[in-house]
Image (cartoon, helix red, strand yellow):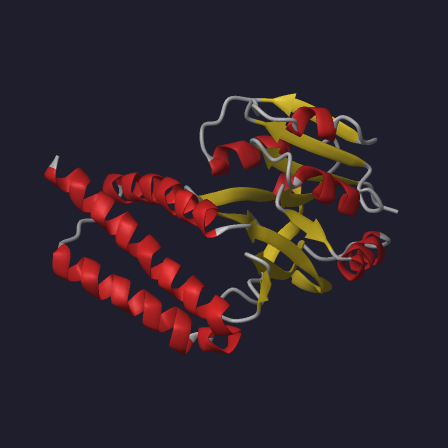
Amino acid sequence: MTSITAAIITFNEEKNIARCIESLLPVADEILIVDSFSKDRTKEIALSYPKVHFIENPFEGHIQQKNIALQGAKNEWVLSLDADEALTSELANSILNTLENPVADAYKFNRLTYYCGHWVKYCGWYPDTKIRLVKKSNAEWRGENPHDRLEVITGNNIVHLKGDLLHYSYYSAEQHYKQIEYFGEIASKAAYRNGKRTNWLLILLKTGFQFIKSFFLKLGFLDGRTGWLISKRSAYATYVKYTKLLTLQKS
């Protein structure tokens, strides 16, 4: 069977890292963790498991950190996960079966998100298909921080595997709002560097459309109250990003 490295980046992930690692143990020959000098028990917990190779590297951005993890893998085939993700048993079996004779350029699968106590099936959050199993010599993390994506450099034979990747996103509204501010800061600076500009009319239009898109066009209402909250907070995230961009313009 083809050997595989699971690559994860971490920073203060003591709530999530054990679940992530345990889901990978039946699949990975190496579990490589690139940590940004966590202040909690992330390192201690991670090193209590077999197969874990733990290194520390200063954080320069999500994309940069994930590429360090990708290229640092000892095996050619790499499964990239976030610390707040975990494989279902169905997906783990799909990966094991695939690695008996991998023929595609890369493999993708659906991601199912757990939000404040509820699994989210709408709002544009599912199936949220991701490419995550690749050859490190033929893949690279790209995008614009904090929105990264794993891309295949050459070839387009990408096979969809059965099973979900579970994403344990936010445990509380407070945690979500904190992340909105954090990501909004990063995204607004990236937008400003890329020459994007805005005004109050555009901000209001974009904010309103984001709610309509999430709650109505992406059927968020079928997720009930959770869909309402996600749609409202997604709209707020758009508002935060573009008001921060406007502040950068003025300064």
